[in-house]
Amino acid sequence: MRVLMPFAYFLPEQVASTHLDRDMLSCFSENGLDVRIVCPVPTRGCSAEEIHRYAGIRHETMYGGRVTVDRYWAPQEKGNSLLRALRYYWCYLRQARLCAKIDADAALIPSTPPFNLKLAAKLKKKRPGMRILYNLQDIFPDSLVNTGLAGPGSLLWKIGRRMEDRGYAAADRIVVISDDFRQNIRAKGVPDEKIALIRNWVDENAVVAVPREENRLFDEYGLDRDRFYVCYSGNIGHTQNMELLLDVAASLADRPDVGFVIVGDGAYREQVAERIRTEKIGNVTMIPFQPYERISEVFSIGDAGLIISKAGIGGNSVPSKTWSVMSASRPVLASFDKDSELDRVVTGNRCGVCVPPDDPQALRNAILALAEDREGRLGMGRRGRAYIEQNLTRSIGTSKWPDALSAKTV
Image (cartoon, rainbow, N blue to C red; front, side, top):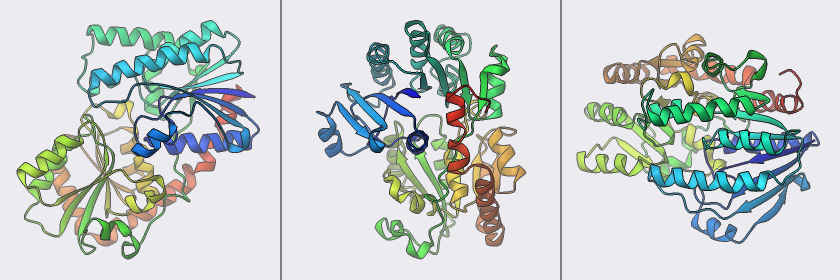
């Protein structure tokens, strides 16, 4: 089978879904599938040296020749939301033209950027014999509301809903990552037979607990090994409630035994760093994005792994970092919508604590309770790791994708 995969970001770029993409490509190549990737040259999530090195590379092969990568030039990504949207549209125009020329049995289209909804419709029209799968990791235009860029019923919302309907109609199958996602698009008129549920996973062998005395990040960033740490790792953006995190950290200034670590990058990183500096929030340490090879060290920094979002996100977001926290045998500390899928997994399996979003007192109380109950949080960590091993390993997750591509029941 020949599979077309357009990407907005691809190796050596490191983004939230990089490990999933890498695992899928390994699975596809092992199952004899030939993959053609169309993507821009690297512009973010990697070093300046790598960006420079790849500037002149337009074609390469990977995975023993099973994967072919075709790259095109794209403008550098900027932090400004409008400039990012313009870059996304540029990529859509280039990919629509390039992908339409490729003869493949199936196209696996990611939901980032949102213009890929238009790409799905365009490919279905240009290549009617090609099977179209839409990999729904982020629900647009719901995400516009989450980030405050549009309100329900606004013009931008209506345009997004029109794109969404046309993209879903063009797809032969829509792969969702949670039951909440399934309910969301079912309510928008997508029939059940068109929906397949394949939850995201974590490579349980790549993300493991690292003993604190062996974790080099403590020495590199001057972290006290005797302190209780809450660690947030991932995108530092507008939907992640960094203001709430800093409010709670500031309120715990009188607890020298409690500290916070923020690992990652994103559009809101500089604002977070500036507030830490100006308000002298001394119990928060910021660490740059780390290479995937150090992911176990990252998720082993904290005594608890923080998942934090603004209210209203839960129905269309399941942060994959949750599974990495659990794989590293750490309790999940979630400031997240109650009765969301994340809440049901965490509280139902007793592998962490979920408190309502936008509630600083509830988050503060949960942090102090975990800090004072070492045996309790160790038990949560063990149960979280067991849940991953039973439900969300790399082999369990990737094994479902070849069947989805070949129209078999998942």
